Image (cartoon, rainbow, N blue to C red; front, side):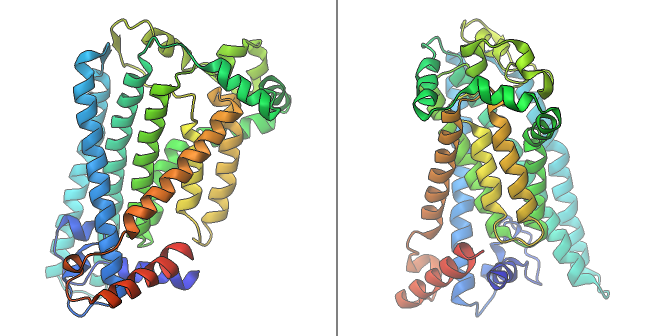
Length: 382
C-alpha cells in the first residue's frame, strides 16, 4: 500500500523543467519528458481524462443553469457575487505561485528543486480550491432551481421507507438529544464539511497525489449533479417538517438543526420571485452530506496518519445527518448509493481502454500492461 502511494507521488511529481501549462498543474505535464515508463504514460492519460471530465461537468452545469434561470423564479445575484469574490484571490494566488516557480527555475540555490516542487504542489492545491468553489456555486444554484417547484412533496413515501426499515426518526433524535456531549460532537462533525472541502485537496496536493486529487474533484462534481437530478424527481421537506415533533427534541443540537432550510424551501415552492441571500442546503433526498462523507473517506484511503481520523470524523458526520439535516434514514442510504455510483463511473472514465494515438509509441500489449499496473498498484491498493 505504501509502495503504491509512493509510486503515484513519484509519477505525479512535477518535472525539473517547468512548462507552466495547465497540464503540468494537474500532474499531466510530465508527458513531455522522454523515455517515460508505460506506468507514467498510462497514469498521465487517466489524469487527462479526469481533467476533461471535470471541465466538461463544470461547463455543463453552468450552461444548464443559464438556460434554466430565465424560466425560473430564482434571482442569483448573491450567488454570482460570492463566486466572483471567492475566485478572484485564488486566481491571483495561482498566478503568483506560477511566477515564483518561473523565477526559481532561473535562480540556482541549494533548495531550488524542493522549493519548486512545493510551489507546484501549492499551486495545484489553489487550482483545486478554485475548481471546487466553482462547482459548489454551480451545484448550489442548480439545487435552488430544482427545489423551486410546486410538485407534491414525497415525504410520506420516504417516511414509509424508514418504517419498512424499522427506523424511528423521533426516537433516534430523542436518544441523541438526551446526551448533550454526543449531540454537540456530532454537530461539530456535521459542520466540518466545508472545512474538509478545503483540507482534503490541500492534503492530496501537498503530498503529491495529483491523480487522487483529480479523482476527488471528479467525484465531488458527479455526486452533486446526480443528487440534484434526483431532487427534481423526489422533492421533499425533511423528517422534521413531516413528523412535526416538539422543538425541544433538538435542543442539544443548536439552533437551526433540521429547520434551517424550511423557510427558504417553502418560499421557493410558492414560485414567487426569490433572491438567494443566505444560501442553505435544501436537498433532503438523497443526503449529499452522507455522499460526501463516503467520498472524503474514499479519497484518503491508504494515507498514513490521515485516513483513520478522517474515517472517524465522517462516521460522526453520517450519524449527525439525521438530526442536523432533517434526513430520513433512507436519505442517508441513498447518499451512500450516490457515492458508490459516482466512484464506479469515475473509475470507468479513468480506466477506459487507452488508444494508441494518445499513448504515443506504446504497443497494444504494452498499453494493457501499463493500464493493469496502474489500476492494480496505484488505485486499488492505496
